[in-house]
Length: 307
Ligand SMILES: C[S@@+](CC[C@H](N)C(=O)[O-])C[C@H]1O[C@@H](n2cnc3c(N)ncnc32)[C@H](O)[C@@H]1O
Image (cartoon, rainbow, N blue to C red; front, side, top):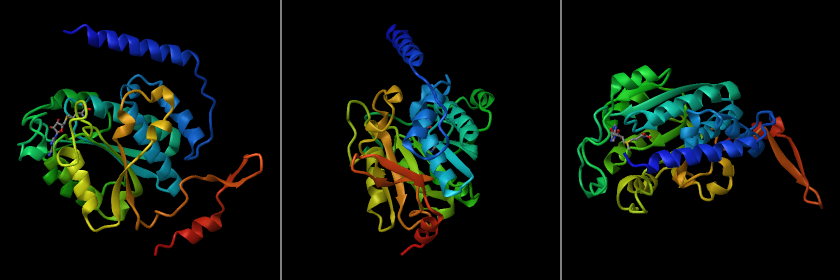
C-alpha cells in the first residue's frame, strides 16, 4: 500500500484539529441565509462521518433550508451511483443531523445497479476512463451499515420511472455520480417529473464533471447529458453554480468540489417566485448598513402567481 494516503489523512486530520481549536459555534436562529448556513456547516462538519464528504453537507443543508422556508416539511435526498457506499453513508448522516437542526423529515435514497457500471454504449460513455463492471457493491455489507437510506437497485432506465410512480417526497438534493453519459441521461429524467416531486430550485452535484485532470468535455459523459437536458424546449434548466467557492466557508472549501454544483431551476414551478429566506435586506443606508427584516406576508401572497 502506498504511504501517501495515510500521510494525506494524517495531515488532513491535523489541519482540521488545528482549525477546530479556533472555531466558535455561536448558535444562529434558523433562516436560509449565509450566517445560519455557516453555523450549520461548521456544526455538521464536526461529525466524523459527515466530514468525509463536505459536499454532501452543503447539498443537504441547502436543500433542506430552502424547503423549510418554502413550507415543505418532508424531502428526499439522493445519491445516484453508490458503489461501495462510502458516499451514501455520509449522505445519510448529513440527513440525520440536518433533520434535527432544521426540523423537517428527510428520506435518503441510493441508486445503483448493485453490480457496477452497466454496458458501455459508445465513446460518449467515456470508455477511456471506466469500463463495464467497475465499482460493484457488496450489498449485504452496506445494508448492515445503513440506518435509514434505501437502496434502489437496477439500471436507472428502469428505476427512475418506477421511483417517479411511487411519488417520493420532493427531491431537494441529488448527488449524481454515475460517470457514464447514457446512465446520467436516464437519471436526469427524474427532473422531468411533476412539480410536487421537485423543489423550484433543486440542488445537484455532478461528481465526474471534471474527470481526471480536466479530461471531460461538453461532448461526452455527464456534461453532454446536462447539455442535452438544457437543449429541451422546457422551463427547466440545469445551471452551473458559478462562483460557489466564494460562498462556501474556507474551512470546508477543500478541493474542487464547489465546481461540481448545479442548480435545477424550474422557472414555472408554483413556488419559484416565493422568497427564499425568512428575512431579507430591505434598506441600505448612506453608511452601507443594511436593515434586515422579516419578509412581509403580503409579498409572499402577491408573488405566488405565475405568468
Ligand atoms: C464512481 S461510482 C460511485 C461512487 C460513489 N458515489 C462514492 O462516492 O463512493 C459509479 C457507480 O455508478 C453506478 N452506475 C453507473 N451507471 C448506472 C446505471 N445506469 N444505473 C445504476 N447505477 C449505475 C455503478 O454501479 C457504480 O457503482
